Length: 294
Length: 240
Ligand SMILES: Nc1ncnc2c1ncn2[C@@H]1O[C@H](COP(=O)(O)OP(=O)(O)OP(=O)(O)O)[C@@H](O)[C@H]1O
Ligand SMILES: [Mg+2]
Image (tube, rainbow over all chains, first blue to last red; front, side, top):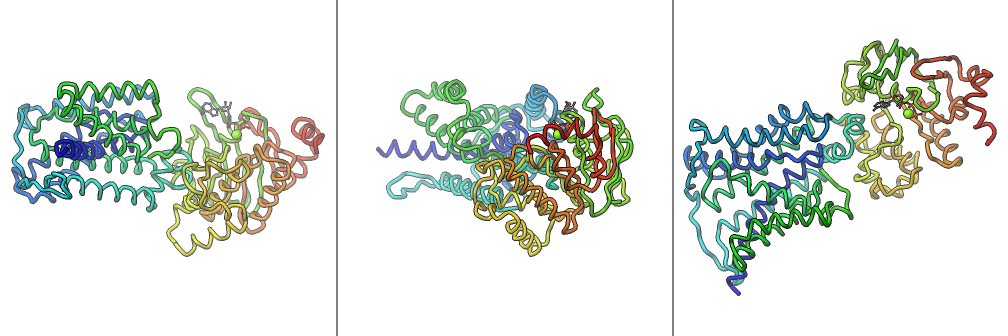
């Protein structure tokens, strides 16, 4: 029983990290109806910048995290401006190909010797891992940190979108660019901001991921990226609570599969979910009852 | 003169939708643009509010050339465009939709007062303030669209087919509201399929045919024109 609880906590941690990435997919999809396939690579850059922050430059962990988030926010805005904005009102396939191009560029550019280099790096733990039993549930301090940080970020995001002027503008851009323009909304800036927030969340996910699974390399964003994308589709692409729900399910499915069925099956099952959702309910779990996006 | 449109040519790709249109709107008036489907009325409105860029010609608002200014900045100059088909935000509540209309404003107290004024003008919106706008009836959605358009306190209000799809009773109501808004000092540029009603409330009228203005003058004269009577008013007169 304790083993099951432990796996569920592991799955929760993984799910929350997927949620951080899935939010970026879903927010960007909400405002520009584009799957930003470079998003997993922004997560990778976040992991590296975070690692350099606390392991190489000796920054305190919170500062290293904020630094990675800011750099990735800028990266996200640059990607949008260069690779997506010129194609915004072109056929969707053009932007999709551009997204794949950006993704490959980030992976191979990062692999260069003078950038991050092609090899695995082992990430030293910035905090000492401590095992606790809370209400009889085995949990580590790192897991608690991940879960608390992500919950706080989700709450902040919710407040931003539903309680601020800029959040309201984002919700209108998600419906209709021209109608938003007629209200005085600067659509370009709003889309930029959406990319910035999504990328900062991915960066946070990257740093936490590197702390929890302490090994990083330039292609590390592919798998979590695809699984978070699956999570976003599972929850209903474009729907923020959907991304979180989808990510939590993905985290559990993957962890429990690895623990109780076969660790070789975990990825296969994750993507089988993607195919099944697309076949059976392409709008995702929350897709029909709710039309809310951003 | 608050708005002057000169020799406007607008293209969609290779299609020339406006073939050199000129018209003026005097301050305090209601000016209407009438014409058949596809004549170019909405295209004209979208060019004035900055959603489309003309290839030739210009738009002058209060003495300033605005046709190079992006739409989101034109709102700040005092032009509010209530688009065809309403285009309200279905995922926002009625109140949020109205607040979006005041997006360019920063005076909290003033916004609150405008919100009250709009709710007074459209009492049905007050009852539904917290409801998602997408769940409203067509008529209520039109009220949201007009109310939202008023929230920026525009000097020029552009209404593109406000009576579309409404019951005769509601059409009457909407036109009364248009008249009142105008009497309270807002200049109105009105596009209508319902030429009969539009010519009743307007001071000046322009008739558009395939991207050209074919007739213009005081609304009363246009209304009396025999060609207009048969082309645009015949059907409407029979039912009324
Ligand atoms: N987005 C677009 N792309 C291509 N052509 C367009 C587009 N919008 C309008 N047109 C064309 O431009 C012409 C003018 O259209 P517009 O919408 O301005 O007409 P309208 O007078 O408002 O008609 P209606 O009374 O039906 O609203 C039409 O021939 C239309 O087919
Ligand atoms: Mg039209």
